[in-house]
Amino acid sequence: MSDDVVLYAVEDGVAKLTLNRPEKRNALNGELVQAVKDRLEDAATDEHVRVVTITGAGKDFCSGADLAELERISEMGHEENLEDARSLGALFTQMRSHPRPIVALVKGRALAGGCGLATACDLVLARDDAEFGYPEVHLGFVPALVMTILRRKVSEARAFDLVAGGATIDAAEAERIGLVTKVFAAFTFPSDIAKYVDRLAAKPPSALARTKSLLYELDGLDFEAGMERAAQVNAEARMTEECREGIRGFLERSKD
Image (tube, rainbow, N blue to C red; front, top):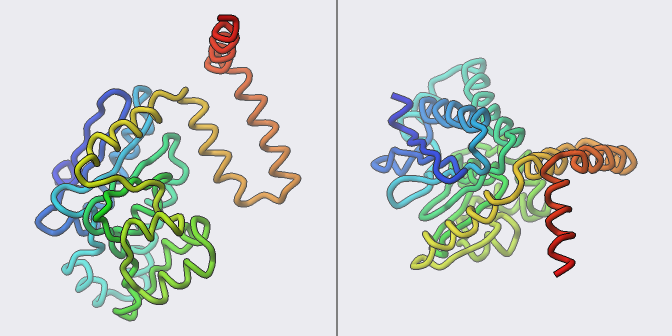
């Protein structure tokens, strides 16, 4: 079943994950969350993969938890709810520690847990008619898991406004506040995202992996410890064949 709810293909160094519940607006449930975890693990262990993309089949990226899941949550006890919340949290943690850049390709609506899934990606490319929001507060719910990531992407005041107000914002506003990386016009969206992702996939994979790892590792370090860790990563990168080849190529081009 999990193979059906998330489509997976690798092409030209890009692992493409497609949430495949278009009739449910790609709403999240336990099966879909587990399937995304499984496919991300496949991508992490495939030496041919340099970039991972996540998108949704049909009109929307992901509309959040589906109605059956919400009904199930309302009937669960504390321990069951805690286990269920930890499962989604484990997905976000897996995405942050994944060795490859993960890019959300968002069209239509990315709401609630679906907006959380996009936010957990390293980069978010949006079509200009996309919509983003965390409307959980309207149901007396708290978008708790995503806040760990959201407050690192936008200012504290912006994060509070988004989660406490529960409003839906358009792609342009999402880009302005830092929730979205880039916005592309609907009629050029397929070609624009392909160019962006292909350029990213063309970068040396070990450099990308070290860049992503260091960026997030610095969260938990003070300034001096961060500088020391950065020096270590810098030295490690210099010793790779990728770096040596890159330097040789640059020096040869400089002679022309």
